[in-house]
Amino acid sequence: MLFVSKPKARVEIERKFMGAGLRIILIGRLVDCTFRDVEEILKSYRFMDAVVKIYGEATLDEVEEAIFESTAYKSAVIVANKIDLEGSESNLKLLETYVGNKLPIVAVSCEKGYGIEKLGEALFKTLNIIRVYTKEPKEKEFSKRPFILKKGAIVYDLAKNIHSDFSEKFSFAKVWSKRLVFSPQKVGSTFVLEDQDVVEIHVK
Image (cartoon, rainbow, N blue to C red):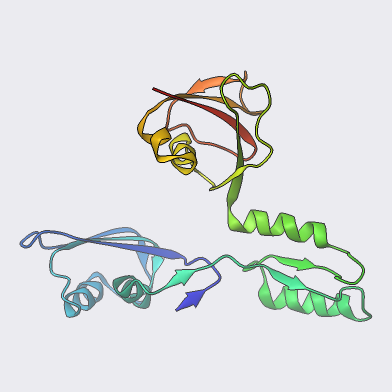
């Protein structure tokens, strides 16, 4: 099953050794069911020894989906083309009313070239990614081709993307960033990166 909007709930199931029993941790609330309902459906699928963590507002269906691990959530953007045509503005308002805040809508005209620059921005934001540039030690200029990482990535993730040796032999890194009080700043492997940071990695 595939959805384009993020779920309200997140259910994590971790199997434990035999005899550990079934433990349900609720960090949020159950919408259409009780603890007993969740326990029964888990046991019906032979989850006798596990820790189940439920975040947000969860339904019994979402618990069942977590059991099968068959649900994938993909980011999406609605591209409303031909915005230059007559009557397109009213159609766009109808679309915005129907979709609400569930998905971003970008109005474009491929023929006129209108809104194309906004599409790139919307895709970048929706994908939840960052661009991180690298610099070789002793080099003055940094690379013009960034590494694309997930938002929230740390220096270790970047090192692993460059080469496996970098993550294994990591010593420290220097980071250039507008948000820092001074640049470069010497950081460790768990330093959280942000968009357009420049990183110089030093290995042992």
